[in-house]
Amino acid sequence: MIARLGRLLSAVFAKTAPDPFVLAVLLTLATAALAFFFGSFPDATPGTARLTAIVDAWRGPNGIWRFLAFGMQMCLILVTGHALAESRPVRAIIRGLAGSPKSAGGAAAMIGIVAMGFGLINWGLGLIVGALLARDVARALESRGVPAHGPLLAAAGYAGMLVWHGGLSGSAPIYMTRAEQAAAVLPAETIAQLGDSAAIPLDRTVFSPLNLFVTGGVLLLVPALLMLLTPRQASHITPMPAEDDLFEDPPLPIRSLPDFLERSPVIPWALALFLGWALYRFGSTGPAGQPWWRAALSIGPNEINMAMLALGLVAHGSVRSYVGSAERGARGCAGIILQFPLYAGIMGMLATSGLIASFSNWVAATATANNLPLLTFVSAGVVNLFVPSGGGQWAIQGPIALGAGQRLGVPPEKMVMAVAYGDQLTNMLQPFWALPLLAITGVKARDIVGYTAILMLVAGAWMALGLFLF
Image (tube, rainbow, N blue to C red; front, side):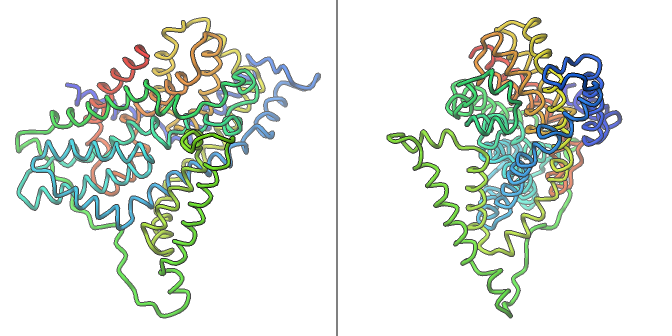
């Protein structure tokens, strides 16, 4: 019944939801209309026409171009994670794991836990590792005559997107570790309102008791669910389509100096060592007497991308291999590149028109300190269906959530995680980020959504419990 509901919801979204870029344009127009009719524009120059103030807010320094650095950081999270997942050492680990399951249920559970584990490190890494592992496990089981349901294995490989926003590449937590990073995404009035609370180290978000409870519980629940969902009857089993290995580059002879430089490990190792030195300097240049792990709790997207880039370069061992993998990963950045300027423009209009404060006041007036995190969690899940980007969603919803939390006395770190959990939850219905996985496994989106919908319902109940208890 639940699987049928998942397929029904997927079919409804497939028929009614336009491309995310179209939705970003529609959200831009809707925000402009709201600002025109309900905005107060407290800082506008006297005598400026309302429509002119809206256009100026959209095009100004806090408008469409504000998120250029932010968008680049999000692209690098995807590209560096994708590239590391395709490297030979990681592929060797995947192949080693692929032969270990003895049953179809155990295989689905193993894929889910591995995909989520890597997803907590980097969501791009978890997505590609999950896809490759699902495909290789299907091949290994088939070679031993064990029937395996391809759509369920692919759904297990997508499970990393159910925990990613509570991990080290989660947009909301990592952008709040330092005030200057938060200021690059959130409007100035939100930062001023938060004051000293604008800097939230990772021990209050990713490594907090709340997130350890929520994410730890999901890591246990999902594998158990995947085992229970494994079909037992042969008539219900659909094999995974046979796919070629997409990422194997045949070795070519070195005939020139450029060939040597592109394929030699000297260049990637040199850059990796330089990146490692830069990371060491980040941890050693903090306040006197501060232990290194304190600095580590303030890492942001730049430091995470530096670490992922260094690991990927070393793992690939050549510039040519790494660049080829990065180019494949960059194909998934099109949505980020096109949509983030529109999200920045939306935030600029919301902030300049005074609508962020109005929305925050309205939420604070209709909620209580006890139910605000749960209401934010649910609303974030709905918003993610239409804005399938954790970074873009945080830019739009973050100021409202933090403002309402400040008025009701809810700690900002709890509001950060409420948005993060809602965003990651409905990835199980939103197939936008599943496209690379579907390409690797050959499975269709409609085939996995019934299973991912069940994971979403159970994980959502657990996340809500965590927000209520903590």
